Length: 486
Ligand SMILES: [Fe+2]
Image (cartoon, rainbow, N blue to C red):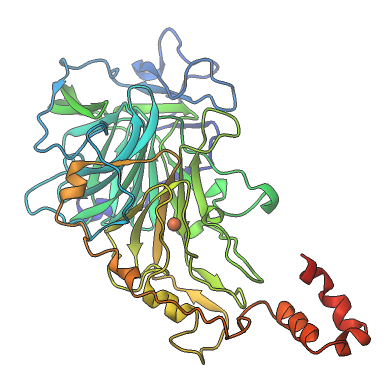
Protein backbone atom coordinates (compact mmCIF):
# COMPACT_ATOMS: atom_id res chain seq x y z
CA UNK A 1 0.00 0.00 0.00
CA UNK A 2 1.52 3.30 -1.03
CA UNK A 3 1.80 5.93 1.65
CA UNK A 4 -0.51 8.28 -0.26
CA UNK A 5 -3.24 5.67 -0.44
CA UNK A 6 -2.74 4.73 3.19
CA UNK A 7 -3.39 8.27 4.31
CA UNK A 8 -6.60 8.59 2.30
CA UNK A 9 -9.47 9.27 4.66
CA UNK A 10 -12.21 6.79 3.91
CA UNK A 11 -15.92 7.48 4.20
CA UNK A 12 -18.18 5.27 6.26
CA UNK A 13 -21.81 4.73 7.17
CA UNK A 14 -22.59 4.46 10.89
CA UNK A 15 -25.00 2.25 12.79
CA UNK A 16 -25.45 -1.36 13.82
CA UNK A 17 -27.76 -3.91 12.20
CA UNK A 18 -29.62 -1.32 10.17
CA UNK A 19 -30.39 -1.37 6.46
CA UNK A 20 -27.52 0.32 4.68
CA UNK A 21 -27.23 1.28 1.02
CA UNK A 22 -24.48 2.75 -1.10
CA UNK A 23 -23.68 3.37 -4.75
CA UNK A 24 -20.40 4.38 -6.32
CA UNK A 25 -22.12 5.65 -9.47
CA UNK A 26 -25.29 7.73 -9.39
CA UNK A 27 -28.39 5.62 -9.95
CA UNK A 28 -26.52 2.29 -9.80
CA UNK A 29 -28.80 1.01 -7.06
CA UNK A 30 -32.12 -0.24 -8.47
CA UNK A 31 -35.13 1.55 -7.06
CA UNK A 32 -38.19 -0.30 -5.78
CA UNK A 33 -37.01 -3.85 -6.42
CA UNK A 34 -33.97 -6.04 -5.88
CA UNK A 35 -33.49 -7.75 -9.22
CA UNK A 36 -34.94 -5.91 -12.19
CA UNK A 37 -34.84 -7.49 -15.63
CA UNK A 38 -31.89 -5.27 -16.45
CA UNK A 39 -29.92 -3.44 -13.77
CA UNK A 40 -28.58 0.10 -14.15
CA UNK A 41 -25.22 0.34 -15.97
CA UNK A 42 -25.62 -3.28 -17.11
CA UNK A 43 -24.74 -4.66 -13.68
CA UNK A 44 -25.56 -8.12 -12.38
CA UNK A 45 -27.73 -8.48 -9.27
CA UNK A 46 -26.56 -11.00 -6.65
CA UNK A 47 -27.83 -11.76 -3.15
CA UNK A 48 -25.56 -12.69 -0.25
CA UNK A 49 -27.52 -14.45 2.52
CA UNK A 50 -26.17 -14.39 6.07
CA UNK A 51 -29.05 -16.30 7.67
CA UNK A 52 -31.48 -18.93 6.47
CA UNK A 53 -34.17 -17.44 4.27
CA UNK A 54 -36.93 -17.76 6.85
CA UNK A 55 -35.01 -16.52 9.88
CA UNK A 56 -37.12 -14.23 12.07
CA UNK A 57 -37.09 -10.67 10.84
CA UNK A 58 -35.07 -9.46 13.84
CA UNK A 59 -32.30 -11.93 13.00
CA UNK A 60 -32.56 -12.02 9.21
CA UNK A 61 -29.40 -10.85 7.43
CA UNK A 62 -28.86 -10.44 3.69
CA UNK A 63 -27.51 -7.96 1.21
CA UNK A 64 -27.96 -7.32 -2.50
CA UNK A 65 -24.89 -6.56 -4.57
CA UNK A 66 -24.81 -5.02 -8.05
CA UNK A 67 -21.59 -5.99 -9.77
CA UNK A 68 -19.81 -5.86 -13.08
CA UNK A 69 -19.61 -9.64 -13.35
CA UNK A 70 -21.18 -12.14 -10.94
CA UNK A 71 -19.04 -14.02 -8.44
CA UNK A 72 -19.89 -17.33 -10.14
CA UNK A 73 -17.57 -16.50 -13.04
CA UNK A 74 -14.36 -18.37 -12.26
CA UNK A 75 -12.33 -21.47 -13.06
CA UNK A 76 -13.03 -24.55 -10.89
CA UNK A 77 -11.87 -24.45 -7.29
CA UNK A 78 -9.14 -26.83 -6.19
CA UNK A 79 -7.48 -27.36 -2.81
CA UNK A 80 -4.63 -25.09 -1.84
CA UNK A 81 -1.57 -26.80 -0.51
CA UNK A 82 -1.11 -24.70 2.56
CA UNK A 83 2.57 -24.49 3.51
CA UNK A 84 1.81 -25.78 6.98
CA UNK A 85 -1.18 -27.04 8.91
CA UNK A 86 -1.47 -23.97 11.04
CA UNK A 87 -5.01 -23.15 9.91
CA UNK A 88 -7.75 -25.57 10.85
CA UNK A 89 -11.37 -25.94 11.82
CA UNK A 90 -10.89 -29.53 12.98
CA UNK A 91 -10.30 -29.82 16.71
CA UNK A 92 -10.58 -33.57 17.06
CA UNK A 93 -6.78 -33.78 17.28
CA UNK A 94 -6.67 -30.98 19.80
CA UNK A 95 -6.18 -31.46 23.51
CA UNK A 96 -7.62 -29.99 26.65
CA UNK A 97 -5.75 -29.19 29.82
CA UNK A 98 -6.66 -27.82 33.21
CA UNK A 99 -3.31 -26.05 33.30
CA UNK A 100 -3.08 -22.33 32.76
CA UNK A 101 -1.64 -21.59 29.31
CA UNK A 102 0.25 -18.59 28.11
CA UNK A 103 2.08 -17.70 24.91
CA UNK A 104 4.81 -15.13 24.44
CA UNK A 105 4.32 -12.76 21.49
CA UNK A 106 3.93 -14.62 18.23
CA UNK A 107 6.75 -13.55 15.88
CA UNK A 108 6.25 -12.32 12.36
CA UNK A 109 8.06 -14.87 10.17
CA UNK A 110 11.05 -13.68 8.12
CA UNK A 111 9.79 -15.23 4.89
CA UNK A 112 7.08 -13.48 2.84
CA UNK A 113 3.66 -14.28 4.22
CA UNK A 114 0.30 -12.66 3.65
CA UNK A 115 -2.66 -12.48 6.04
CA UNK A 116 -4.21 -15.79 4.99
CA UNK A 117 -0.98 -17.73 5.13
CA UNK A 118 -0.13 -16.01 8.38
CA UNK A 119 -3.18 -17.38 10.18
CA UNK A 120 -2.34 -19.74 13.02
CA UNK A 121 -5.16 -21.57 14.81
CA UNK A 122 -4.66 -21.80 18.57
CA UNK A 123 -7.85 -23.45 19.73
CA UNK A 124 -11.50 -23.99 19.02
CA UNK A 125 -14.61 -26.00 19.70
CA UNK A 126 -17.46 -27.46 17.71
CA UNK A 127 -17.56 -27.99 13.98
CA UNK A 128 -17.78 -25.68 11.04
CA UNK A 129 -19.77 -28.33 9.17
CA UNK A 130 -22.67 -28.20 11.60
CA UNK A 131 -22.26 -24.49 12.27
CA UNK A 132 -21.49 -24.88 15.96
CA UNK A 133 -18.68 -23.41 17.98
CA UNK A 134 -15.74 -21.18 17.20
CA UNK A 135 -12.01 -20.95 16.50
CA UNK A 136 -9.35 -18.62 17.85
CA UNK A 137 -6.47 -17.67 15.59
CA UNK A 138 -3.57 -15.27 15.62
CA UNK A 139 -2.12 -13.80 12.47
CA UNK A 140 1.30 -12.45 11.55
CA UNK A 141 1.89 -11.09 8.06
CA UNK A 142 4.45 -9.01 6.21
CA UNK A 143 2.89 -8.94 2.74
CA UNK A 144 -0.33 -7.59 1.33
CA UNK A 145 -2.78 -9.88 -0.43
CA UNK A 146 -2.13 -8.85 -4.00
CA UNK A 147 -4.54 -10.10 -6.64
CA UNK A 148 -6.19 -12.45 -4.19
CA UNK A 149 -9.26 -12.43 -1.97
CA UNK A 150 -10.66 -14.72 0.69
CA UNK A 151 -14.23 -15.73 1.41
CA UNK A 152 -14.75 -17.61 4.66
CA UNK A 153 -17.69 -19.99 4.32
CA UNK A 154 -17.11 -21.27 7.86
CA UNK A 155 -18.24 -18.21 9.77
CA UNK A 156 -17.68 -14.62 10.77
CA UNK A 157 -14.22 -13.22 11.47
CA UNK A 158 -13.69 -10.70 14.25
CA UNK A 159 -10.25 -9.23 13.61
CA UNK A 160 -8.29 -7.55 16.43
CA UNK A 161 -5.12 -5.89 15.08
CA UNK A 162 -2.30 -5.65 17.60
CA UNK A 163 0.50 -4.38 15.37
CA UNK A 164 0.27 -2.70 11.97
CA UNK A 165 -2.70 -0.98 10.40
CA UNK A 166 -4.74 -2.90 7.83
CA UNK A 167 -6.76 -1.83 4.85
CA UNK A 168 -9.53 -4.34 4.29
CA UNK A 169 -10.69 -4.39 0.70
CA UNK A 170 -14.14 -5.93 0.68
CA UNK A 171 -16.93 -6.41 -1.82
CA UNK A 172 -18.80 -3.67 0.04
CA UNK A 173 -15.94 -1.16 0.06
CA UNK A 174 -12.84 -0.28 2.04
CA UNK A 175 -12.19 -0.35 5.79
CA UNK A 176 -9.05 1.03 7.43
CA UNK A 177 -8.46 -0.76 10.71
CA UNK A 178 -5.61 0.13 13.05
CA UNK A 179 -4.55 -1.38 16.39
CA UNK A 180 -7.13 -0.22 18.90
CA UNK A 181 -9.89 -0.87 16.39
CA UNK A 182 -11.63 -4.10 15.39
CA UNK A 183 -13.33 -5.30 12.23
CA UNK A 184 -15.97 -7.93 11.55
CA UNK A 185 -16.07 -9.71 8.19
CA UNK A 186 -19.31 -11.71 7.95
CA UNK A 187 -19.38 -15.22 6.57
CA UNK A 188 -18.94 -15.35 2.80
CA UNK A 189 -17.88 -11.76 2.19
CA UNK A 190 -14.83 -11.64 -0.06
CA UNK A 191 -12.01 -9.51 1.26
CA UNK A 192 -8.29 -8.87 0.97
CA UNK A 193 -5.92 -7.60 3.64
CA UNK A 194 -3.52 -4.86 2.59
CA UNK A 195 -0.77 -3.86 5.00
CA UNK A 196 -0.54 -0.13 5.57
CA UNK A 197 2.91 0.05 7.09
CA UNK A 198 4.92 -3.12 7.27
CA UNK A 199 4.43 -6.17 9.42
CA UNK A 200 1.05 -6.83 10.96
CA UNK A 201 0.02 -9.04 13.85
CA UNK A 202 -3.23 -9.61 15.66
CA UNK A 203 -5.96 -11.93 16.82
CA UNK A 204 -9.06 -13.44 15.21
CA UNK A 205 -12.21 -14.87 16.73
CA UNK A 206 -14.09 -16.95 14.18
CA UNK A 207 -17.63 -18.04 15.02
CA UNK A 208 -19.18 -20.94 13.14
CA UNK A 209 -22.72 -20.07 14.16
CA UNK A 210 -24.71 -16.88 14.46
CA UNK A 211 -23.42 -13.36 14.08
CA UNK A 212 -21.95 -10.72 16.36
CA UNK A 213 -24.53 -8.56 18.09
CA UNK A 214 -24.57 -5.84 20.68
CA UNK A 215 -25.29 -7.13 24.20
CA UNK A 216 -28.51 -6.25 25.97
CA UNK A 217 -27.93 -3.48 28.48
CA UNK A 218 -30.43 -4.45 31.17
CA UNK A 219 -30.45 -2.00 34.08
CA UNK A 220 -27.75 0.11 32.40
CA UNK A 221 -30.46 1.53 30.16
CA UNK A 222 -30.38 2.74 26.59
CA UNK A 223 -26.82 4.07 26.42
CA UNK A 224 -23.32 2.99 27.22
CA UNK A 225 -20.79 0.27 26.46
CA UNK A 226 -20.52 0.05 22.65
CA UNK A 227 -23.00 2.50 21.18
CA UNK A 228 -24.54 1.52 17.80
CA UNK A 229 -23.66 4.77 16.05
CA UNK A 230 -19.94 4.11 16.50
CA UNK A 231 -19.89 1.05 14.22
CA UNK A 232 -18.69 2.08 10.77
CA UNK A 233 -19.60 0.36 7.49
CA UNK A 234 -17.98 0.97 4.10
CA UNK A 235 -19.38 2.84 1.15
CA UNK A 236 -19.50 1.22 -2.28
CA UNK A 237 -16.15 1.10 -4.03
CA UNK A 238 -15.14 -0.94 -7.06
CA UNK A 239 -12.28 -1.62 -9.42
CA UNK A 240 -13.05 -2.50 -13.03
CA UNK A 241 -9.94 -4.56 -13.74
CA UNK A 242 -10.04 -7.26 -16.39
CA UNK A 243 -7.38 -9.49 -17.87
CA UNK A 244 -5.30 -10.26 -14.81
CA UNK A 245 -5.10 -13.56 -12.98
CA UNK A 246 -6.95 -13.19 -9.72
CA UNK A 247 -6.99 -15.86 -7.02
CA UNK A 248 -10.21 -16.27 -5.12
CA UNK A 249 -9.66 -18.25 -1.94
CA UNK A 250 -12.52 -20.04 -0.26
CA UNK A 251 -12.34 -21.49 3.25
CA UNK A 252 -14.68 -24.40 3.85
CA UNK A 253 -14.46 -26.56 7.00
CA UNK A 254 -11.02 -25.12 7.56
CA UNK A 255 -9.75 -26.18 4.14
CA UNK A 256 -8.58 -23.59 1.67
CA UNK A 257 -9.60 -23.82 -1.96
CA UNK A 258 -8.55 -21.49 -4.75
CA UNK A 259 -10.05 -20.55 -8.10
CA UNK A 260 -8.62 -18.36 -10.81
CA UNK A 261 -10.58 -15.63 -12.48
CA UNK A 262 -9.64 -12.94 -14.92
CA UNK A 263 -11.10 -9.94 -13.11
CA UNK A 264 -11.11 -8.33 -9.71
CA UNK A 265 -13.77 -9.66 -7.33
CA UNK A 266 -14.04 -6.14 -5.92
CA UNK A 267 -16.39 -5.11 -8.70
CA UNK A 268 -19.53 -4.20 -6.74
CA UNK A 269 -20.77 -0.80 -7.89
CA UNK A 270 -23.76 -0.57 -5.56
CA UNK A 271 -25.27 -2.53 -2.72
CA UNK A 272 -27.92 -2.46 -0.04
CA UNK A 273 -28.75 -4.64 2.95
CA UNK A 274 -28.02 -5.43 6.58
CA UNK A 275 -25.26 -8.01 6.05
CA UNK A 276 -22.19 -5.83 5.79
CA UNK A 277 -18.62 -5.79 7.16
CA UNK A 278 -17.86 -3.11 9.71
CA UNK A 279 -15.27 -1.69 12.07
CA UNK A 280 -15.31 -0.18 15.54
CA UNK A 281 -12.87 1.99 17.46
CA UNK A 282 -12.45 0.51 20.94
CA UNK A 283 -11.70 4.00 22.27
CA UNK A 284 -15.41 4.74 21.71
CA UNK A 285 -16.37 2.11 24.28
CA UNK A 286 -18.14 3.75 27.23
CA UNK A 287 -17.25 1.64 30.27
CA UNK A 288 -19.45 1.17 33.32
CA UNK A 289 -17.80 0.30 36.60
CA UNK A 290 -18.11 0.16 40.38
CA UNK A 291 -18.29 3.62 41.96
CA UNK A 292 -18.48 2.55 45.62
CA UNK A 293 -16.96 -0.82 46.41
CA UNK A 294 -16.27 -4.30 45.03
CA UNK A 295 -15.39 -5.48 41.54
CA UNK A 296 -17.90 -6.15 38.76
CA UNK A 297 -17.74 -9.25 36.59
CA UNK A 298 -15.94 -8.70 33.25
CA UNK A 299 -19.25 -9.05 31.39
CA UNK A 300 -19.66 -5.35 32.13
CA UNK A 301 -17.05 -4.75 29.43
CA UNK A 302 -18.71 -6.78 26.65
CA UNK A 303 -18.35 -5.09 23.27
CA UNK A 304 -19.98 -7.73 21.09
CA UNK A 305 -21.65 -11.05 21.76
CA UNK A 306 -22.71 -13.97 19.60
CA UNK A 307 -26.08 -15.03 20.98
CA UNK A 308 -27.07 -18.67 21.10
CA UNK A 309 -29.75 -20.03 18.82
CA UNK A 310 -31.70 -20.93 21.98
CA UNK A 311 -33.45 -18.15 23.83
CA UNK A 312 -31.85 -17.59 27.24
CA UNK A 313 -28.94 -19.94 26.59
CA UNK A 314 -25.38 -18.66 27.09
CA UNK A 315 -23.76 -17.01 24.09
CA UNK A 316 -21.38 -18.83 21.77
CA UNK A 317 -18.77 -16.19 22.49
CA UNK A 318 -18.31 -12.73 23.94
CA UNK A 319 -15.74 -10.14 22.93
CA UNK A 320 -14.75 -8.22 26.07
CA UNK A 321 -12.20 -5.44 26.50
CA UNK A 322 -10.42 -4.02 29.53
CA UNK A 323 -10.30 -0.38 28.51
CA UNK A 324 -8.65 2.65 30.09
CA UNK A 325 -10.82 3.80 33.02
CA UNK A 326 -10.78 5.18 36.52
CA UNK A 327 -10.68 2.81 39.46
CA UNK A 328 -12.39 4.40 42.42
CA UNK A 329 -13.78 1.52 44.48
CA UNK A 330 -12.85 2.01 48.12
CA UNK A 331 -11.76 -0.66 50.61
CA UNK A 332 -11.72 -3.00 47.61
CA UNK A 333 -9.12 -5.25 46.04
CA UNK A 334 -9.12 -3.47 42.69
CA UNK A 335 -7.44 -5.87 40.24
CA UNK A 336 -9.50 -8.79 38.92
CA UNK A 337 -10.31 -11.23 41.70
CA UNK A 338 -9.17 -14.84 41.80
CA UNK A 339 -11.75 -16.97 40.07
CA UNK A 340 -12.76 -20.14 38.35
CA UNK A 341 -15.15 -19.63 35.47
CA UNK A 342 -17.63 -22.05 33.90
CA UNK A 343 -16.75 -20.32 30.62
CA UNK A 344 -13.32 -20.48 28.99
CA UNK A 345 -11.22 -17.36 28.61
CA UNK A 346 -8.75 -16.51 25.86
CA UNK A 347 -6.96 -13.23 26.48
CA UNK A 348 -4.76 -11.05 24.31
CA UNK A 349 -2.94 -7.80 24.90
CA UNK A 350 -3.03 -5.04 22.29
CA UNK A 351 -0.73 -2.68 24.17
CA UNK A 352 0.61 -1.85 27.61
CA UNK A 353 0.50 -3.99 30.70
CA UNK A 354 -2.57 -5.87 31.89
CA UNK A 355 -3.66 -4.87 35.38
CA UNK A 356 -3.54 -8.40 36.80
CA UNK A 357 -0.11 -9.37 35.51
CA UNK A 358 3.07 -7.62 36.55
CA UNK A 359 5.47 -10.52 36.15
CA UNK A 360 6.31 -9.41 32.60
CA UNK A 361 5.13 -12.61 30.95
CA UNK A 362 1.87 -11.37 29.43
CA UNK A 363 3.03 -9.17 26.59
CA UNK A 364 1.47 -7.37 23.63
CA UNK A 365 1.07 -9.88 20.83
CA UNK A 366 1.03 -12.81 23.26
CA UNK A 367 -1.96 -14.60 24.73
CA UNK A 368 -3.29 -16.64 27.61
CA UNK A 369 -5.93 -19.33 27.84
CA UNK A 370 -7.81 -20.63 30.86
CA UNK A 371 -10.27 -23.39 30.12
CA UNK A 372 -13.47 -24.07 32.03
CA UNK A 373 -12.89 -23.96 35.81
CA UNK A 374 -9.13 -23.50 35.53
CA UNK A 375 -8.20 -21.23 38.45
CA UNK A 376 -6.46 -17.97 37.65
CA UNK A 377 -6.15 -14.38 38.75
CA UNK A 378 -3.60 -11.73 39.60
CA UNK A 379 0.01 -12.79 39.91
CA UNK A 380 1.95 -12.60 43.16
CA UNK A 381 3.37 -9.12 42.62
CA UNK A 382 -0.05 -7.74 41.69
CA UNK A 383 -1.69 -9.24 44.75
CA UNK A 384 0.96 -8.08 47.15
CA UNK A 385 0.80 -4.55 45.83
CA UNK A 386 -2.98 -4.25 45.49
CA UNK A 387 -3.70 -5.79 48.86
CA UNK A 388 -1.31 -3.33 50.42
CA UNK A 389 1.06 -5.94 51.74
CA UNK A 390 4.05 -4.65 49.87
CA UNK A 391 3.30 -1.05 50.73
CA UNK A 392 1.08 -0.73 53.76
CA UNK A 393 1.27 3.05 53.63
CA UNK A 394 -0.12 3.37 50.08
CA UNK A 395 -2.95 5.89 49.76
CA UNK A 396 -6.26 4.61 48.39
CA UNK A 397 -7.26 7.34 45.98
CA UNK A 398 -8.75 7.20 42.50
CA UNK A 399 -6.38 5.54 40.07
CA UNK A 400 -6.46 5.70 36.31
CA UNK A 401 -5.76 2.66 34.19
CA UNK A 402 -3.86 4.54 31.54
CA UNK A 403 -4.60 5.01 27.89
CA UNK A 404 -1.40 3.16 27.13
CA UNK A 405 -2.95 -0.22 27.96
CA UNK A 406 -5.63 -2.29 26.24
CA UNK A 407 -6.36 -5.96 26.83
CA UNK A 408 -9.25 -8.08 25.58
CA UNK A 409 -10.89 -11.45 26.10
CA UNK A 410 -12.73 -13.95 23.94
CA UNK A 411 -15.00 -15.70 26.44
CA UNK A 412 -16.61 -18.86 25.17
CA UNK A 413 -19.23 -21.24 26.47
CA UNK A 414 -17.93 -24.39 24.81
CA UNK A 415 -14.57 -25.68 26.01
CA UNK A 416 -11.94 -25.13 23.33
CA UNK A 417 -9.38 -27.75 22.37
CA UNK A 418 -5.86 -26.53 21.78
CA UNK A 419 -4.28 -27.45 18.47
CA UNK A 420 -1.08 -29.53 18.55
CA UNK A 421 0.77 -26.72 16.77
CA UNK A 422 -0.27 -24.20 19.43
CA UNK A 423 0.81 -26.48 22.26
CA UNK A 424 4.20 -27.24 20.76
CA UNK A 425 5.14 -23.85 19.34
CA UNK A 426 8.21 -22.08 20.77
CA UNK A 427 6.06 -19.25 22.14
CA UNK A 428 4.53 -21.41 24.87
CA UNK A 429 5.45 -20.01 28.27
CA UNK A 430 6.10 -23.17 30.26
CA UNK A 431 6.82 -21.17 33.42
CA UNK A 432 3.45 -19.43 33.49
CA UNK A 433 2.35 -21.25 36.66
CA UNK A 434 5.27 -19.74 38.54
CA UNK A 435 3.61 -16.32 38.61
CA UNK A 436 1.34 -17.64 41.36
CA UNK A 437 3.79 -19.87 43.21
CA UNK A 438 4.93 -17.02 45.44
CA UNK A 439 1.47 -16.42 46.87
CA UNK A 440 1.89 -17.20 50.53
CA UNK A 441 -0.53 -17.62 53.36
CA UNK A 442 -1.30 -14.43 55.25
CA UNK A 443 -3.73 -16.23 57.52
CA UNK A 444 -3.41 -15.41 61.20
CA UNK A 445 -6.32 -16.54 63.39
CA UNK A 446 -5.15 -14.23 66.18
CA UNK A 447 -5.00 -11.04 64.12
CA UNK A 448 -8.69 -10.08 64.37
CA UNK A 449 -10.90 -8.57 61.64
CA UNK A 450 -9.36 -7.36 58.41
CA UNK A 451 -8.97 -3.61 58.92
CA UNK A 452 -9.36 -2.94 55.19
CA UNK A 453 -12.95 -4.24 55.13
CA UNK A 454 -16.06 -2.13 54.64
CA UNK A 455 -15.96 0.81 57.11
CA UNK A 456 -19.64 0.43 58.00
CA UNK A 457 -18.96 -3.11 59.05
CA UNK A 458 -15.85 -2.08 60.98
CA UNK A 459 -17.89 0.65 62.67
CA UNK A 460 -20.61 -1.77 63.62
CA UNK A 461 -18.08 -4.28 64.82
CA UNK A 462 -16.46 -1.64 67.01
CA UNK A 463 -19.84 -0.66 68.46
CA UNK A 464 -20.62 -4.27 69.24
CA UNK A 465 -17.24 -4.73 70.89
CA UNK A 466 -17.64 -1.67 73.16
CA UNK A 467 -21.00 -2.77 74.55
CA UNK A 468 -24.10 -0.56 74.76
CA UNK A 469 -22.55 2.93 74.40
CA UNK A 470 -23.19 3.33 70.68
CA UNK A 471 -26.57 1.60 70.80
CA UNK A 472 -27.71 3.77 73.67
CA UNK A 473 -27.59 7.00 71.67
CA UNK A 474 -29.64 5.37 68.91
CA UNK A 475 -27.87 6.69 65.82
CA UNK A 476 -25.02 4.24 65.36
CA UNK A 477 -27.06 1.10 65.90
CA UNK A 478 -29.86 2.33 63.62
CA UNK A 479 -27.41 3.22 60.87
CA UNK A 480 -25.58 -0.11 60.88
CA UNK A 481 -28.30 -2.60 61.66
CA UNK A 482 -29.26 -3.43 58.11
CA UNK A 483 -25.67 -3.99 57.06
CA UNK A 484 -25.06 -6.34 59.93
CA UNK A 485 -28.15 -8.34 59.21
CA UNK A 486 -27.59 -8.42 55.45
FE1 LIG B 1 -10.58 -14.78 34.09
